[in-house]
Image (cartoon, rainbow, N blue to C red; front, side):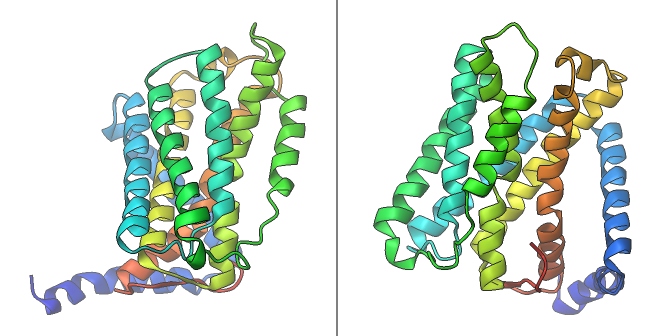
Length: 277
C-alpha cells in the first residue's frame, strides 16, 4: 500500500478527530459515554462467552508489560515511567494475591503472581539499575492521597460474605486501589507534556485492558438482570465494585483519546495538552 493510499484512508478519521477536538468538554464527555455504550453493545453481540473478555483483558495487560520490559531492557531508560504507580500496582496485587489464597484460588491467581513478579522487577530496575534516568521531580503525585482514602473506604464498604472481616476489608481495599493506581503515571505524563512511544503504548494497553474488564462486569450484570450484584453481597458493596471498574476505565479514557489521535496523525511522540489529567 503506497503513501497516497494510506493518507487517503486516514483523512476521514482525521476529519472526525478534528471535529471532536473542536467540541466543548461537555459534548466530548457525552460523546465518550455514547462511544462506550456503542462498544459495549458491539461486544455483547460478537462475544458470546463474556468470560473471554477477561482473557483478552489479561492479554492486553501482558502486552503492555512486554512493551515496558522492552523499554527497560533494550532502551536502557525508565524516563517517563512513574515509580509510584508501580508501587501502587505492587501493593494492590500483593493484597489481591493474599485474598485469592485465603478466599478463592483460580487461574487469575497464577496470572497475578506473574504480574506481581514483573512489577517488582520493574521497581528494581527503576530504583537501582536505571536510577539516573528516573524523573523523580516529575513523579510528584502523593500516593497517600489515594492509599488512605481507599483504606478508609474499604473499612466502610466491603463484602458481606462469611469470610474473616480482615479478608473482606483487604478485598475491598485492592479493588479500590486498583481503580486509581494509574494516577501517578498520568500526573507524570501531564508534568512532562511529552510522552515517548513505549510509555504511551504501555499506558494505552492498560486502558484497553481495564475497558475490557469493565465491559465484562457490565455485560454480566445485564445478562443476569442484576442478579450478579445480588450474588456479590448486600448493601453498598455490589454497586461500589461496578463503580470502581467504571472509574478506572474513565480515568484512562482521556489519555486513550489523545493516543489514538496521535497514532492517526502519524506522530511518534504523544504531546498532551494542559488539563488532560
